[in-house]
Amino acid sequence: MIARLGAALLALLLAPVFGCALLTSTLDEVPPTVLPGDEYEALFPYYVELCAVTQYRSLEFGDGGVPGHAVMYLKGACRDEAADFPSLRACRREATTRDDPEHGAGISVNRWFRNANWIAVPGTDLFFDGGLEDDAVLDQDAFDRAVAASIEAGIFDHIDFDPAYPTRSEERSLEDFVAQQSIATDFALRFSRSAFCSRMPVTEEMMEDIADYLNLVNAEYAAGNADYSWSGYSDNCVHLLRNSLAAASIWQPRSVQTTKLQQLANLAVPANEVINLADLGAHGPLEDGRDVYRTDEARDALLDFDWLPRRHGALVTILPVHEPNELFDTRGRILVLESPFSFGATRKFNRILFDPRFTELRPNLEYFRGVYADILAEGNEIIAGGFLPLRSLRYLRVTKRYFQYVEAQLAEVDAMLKRIAE
Image (cartoon, rainbow, N blue to C red):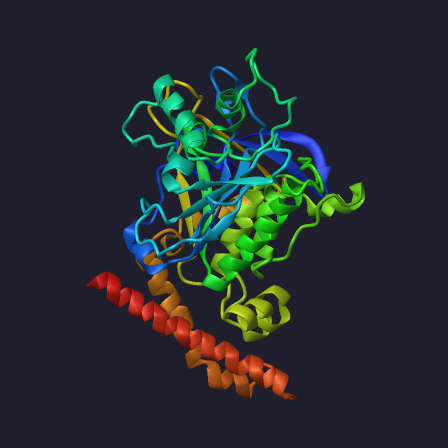
């Protein structure tokens, strides 16, 4: 399990960055599935799920990069089939099961794209599972079916590839590219990788802002204003995903393609970003309204969207690599950027992962019901003690908005608990 991420750290690479180091970790065993069921889907119509997936390790084609890969799944934003470049649209209905065709879309960046930064993969089945049933054997036939299904779904329509992409085939074709450079990276992730994800419910308006940002990024490349130029250092899969969430005031953006010295402060590592989002959902600003007000993103999210990142429904999920598997080495390997003395990032994620308040629906709702109730119970005392200096209507408005928000969240949690008890 994830605890072995800390216990099984194999190599300390001699690459200090601001007092930190790169740590290569392995997983001795495939972790079990951690995934809320249809009760969760019925309660939350919109959520983002940021995932770090382990290293690609093909028995035929060799290994991918040690850092793994970052992807994101958006419930409530669907692939726009009518667009002439990879785009998102609002889903046509609120899905209550993961197999609904209007559930959402997976987002993945591929370094070999030229006229697009990312593609959208419709639905969880193709994105995570490649259409393969849990108890089926992943063999060459299953692999070929997934390649064909992705092409038939149109997810590579209007995409130009870098002609220099590595291949063992004499003839470069779409099928060749998908088989060697896309499957298990852009879709069918579990064919080769385990996914460690942070899921966070968002509002409809926030999902619109996230989709708009992603669409604008791809529109620039589709218009021919520039070719996408992937850089693991300054513009990788994580930068796009983080910045799309920043467009909805979830957290701060990370700059891309800055000077080399400035870019050191904007490194983006898949596992670290998932840990950061999980920690924000579990321990972000909420209980002290002063922290909400002083944190630019939290204040903007509260005032613009009636939303804060530390909230009910923010959970960690795990989807293990597919077994039985004839094509890939299923031993997981992932990289974390952290201090070699404290292993702080790994410890932080362990604390969240092994706490049912942040992995299971009912304990999560019951926990946040208590958090919200305590905030309201202490409200009068906090205001009297100077929760925010009430020197102007601006501060008064934020104070009132904060407590109105908490009241609404408590009412929503009570309704959700009643609903799942019926």
